[in-house]
Image (cartoon, rainbow, N blue to C red; front, side, top):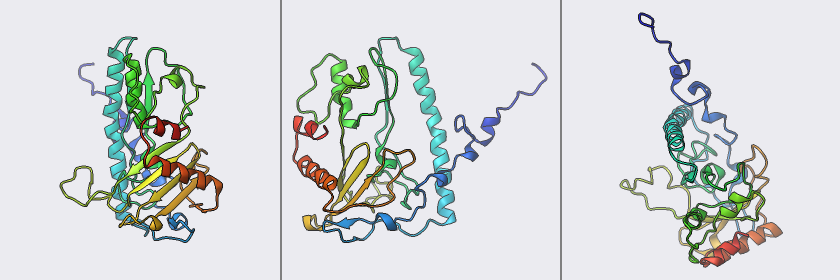
Length: 285
């Protein structure tokens, strides 16, 4: 009423981070933040320990504070995305498909890595994918999904037969039936870029991660790193399992060349290098 001061929103006192106060959001509380990488060092193909990449020393207080502020600012930024999605969904009709996703995640001090998005770890490769629309059954999906599956999904929604040159597969079957057969594996690639101040994607922070190819299932991850000269004999590996458990992260490199699961994942990686279209889709099954 007139003459009375407007009641302040207590949430905004600490900045708008959504339902949680910003001062209670702390990236340093994440399980892998500032964690030692001594147990996850890459290994050569014969099992010998290889050199680590990136920062391996513990982050200092100044670095931790900077990353904490960076993380909170990213959470604040996400509120505008939340508002945008809400406005769109309130505006469109029932015959409209809404798709929300992201191109990459982001590590901030996880495993002592400086900020970036180039690793094969879950902090970087797992992104949200929310789809709503006609015929989409509500609820989560547990099949493995890749970003390259979005294009054939859009083609099928539009009534177009998905192109046979697509390396991904349409998600419509699992959107209509949560128990439908889907992919079991996803492939990840990273090519280390040359350091350049003009590269808007480089951020000047992620050059330490070597080029690699990787394969991820719901529970396992195998990463094969390149050497500088690309010599196959110099490839190094990281292998993790148990990643489907709540709170799990890539803590211990369990790579052993004699492990049958490792050998199977290596075969998939080798076939993936030269696959096209339906051949790539087959490798995800």
